[in-house]
Length: 255
Image 1 (cartoon, rainbow, N blue to C red):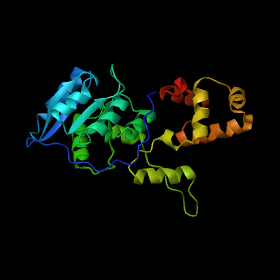
Image 2 (image 1 turned 60 degrees about the vertical axis):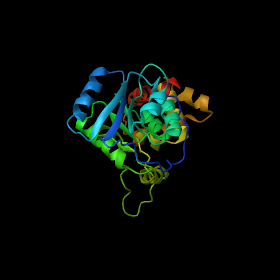
Image 3 (image 1 turned 90 degrees about the vertical axis):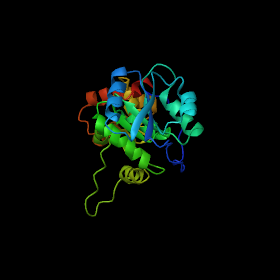
Image 4 (image 1 turned 180 degrees about the horizontal axis):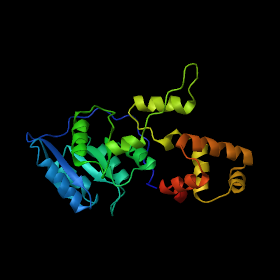
């Protein structure tokens, strides 16, 4: 589970990414050399975008951004060294003209939410087509404050909540989700859960039984069962075993 990023207000207006007249200046921060070379090759197809530097970790990132002044930083979140989300948050305050795009091998609700909270401008999967990543960089450069661009495979994870039928009053979760889409925040399945539901899911991930969860939360077993049913419905999960696997995958069981 990534370290919790501080909740921030909507992104303030910033200047356009730095452009020295030769195109969009991109810094790649990733310890996978093959991916970096692939991105460089993709950039070489278009003279208006180029990689000005590549770093194997975020350890020297803040200093290098200050020295080279890239317009965009492509940042992996699973590298040795400093926590990427905390680094992105510091970068946002120290160099607001630079826009960070998270690039990860994993599409996890917790990661997507943390990326938005730390001030990143987008989230892409490493398995996305390189051309789609380049298109995302362009969209981020064109975007205004509040922009949060999702890669094709991440968009599949952040599907919009289906609208309620005629005469049906939308639930609180649906209303919150609609608001999130309007203010730019990504809506993931996990983000639709209430605080209590996340806690129940976390305990399920730790392998606790219904009775043990009820005892730990000082609730009736039937109340816990009700939470579990709502969690399953919101996440599209049909068995308790699937819930446990999901909680482990999202890192909730480690909390």
